[in-house]
Image 1 (cartoon, rainbow, N blue to C red):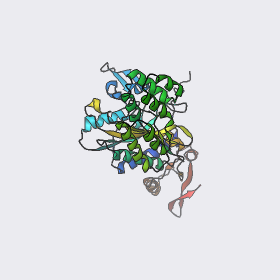
Image 2 (tube, rainbow, N blue to C red):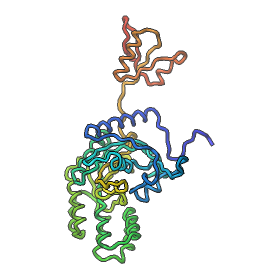
Image 3 (cartoon, rainbow, N blue to C red):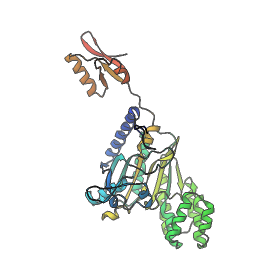
Image 4 (spheres, rainbow, N blue to C red):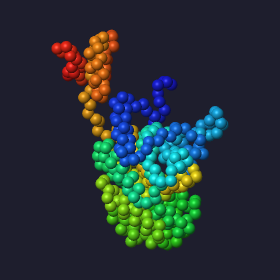
Length: 381
């Protein structure tokens, strides 16, 4: 076997793409910073008891596990950073008021999320802890909109759902855990025949409402239809009111999907996904997950989103750069001063090494430093 071959769905990031990723990372973290979000850097590796707390069975299956040689305990390579940030808020910062945190780092998945997905996504995101009102959900979604705008993507749209609708129907209808799991899978697959078979023994109102959920997909008019045709339960009414408020001021096209239970075992309220042209997978996921910090001793209300930076960098238009500057290697102090000034201004200056006259060309140099009338000046090659 060739020793340079990487595992499937794992890739190297080469200079042009790495430069684009780093540029986007810096822009987005600065956007978060000026909105009051503090940067945290959780570890890549944790004990599974902490890493998988409150995340559900799906995250357990996606997590690489190994044995710690020091303690003998099972450790996991993180598959999602959000639970780690929740731990930091609940156990380390231990603040009473609202806390805004952001992060950026790699995660590892045992299996890719899709045919074009990597098993080493680069996540960047923002979270609000300590506020349970719709205002924090609005802030998070607006921040996501600004982040996507910075990336200059085309055809951005937002799909929004609310897990409380199905959860309320299941509880009121006396649906047991096993049947609830089967209904969840059928709704995710939009499998109408499976739904009809699974709901046969439910009461008429519950069965009719669950069968209706896959049809409750579309624009803001879906909310009005749901209010007319779903049972008048308090939990459903609150969920629809939240969706009404969240979709009223969106700057991007919005779709409502009441059968989308993405993160059902993880989210506690609204859940959303962002999409754009040229990519079938979501480029951002988010929502409310008030119970995620409970296992850490503080069940703080929380809402946030995660963006997938590698996908964003592939889709974002490349930044136009003037190219590097090639400089000769001499003992002239004036040249050293000119090179230092250019680098301080952010220019890439590559000084030639003996025997490698083409080095500047490999660095994509479009300009060079030449001495004209006693001063070093930049000129086009």
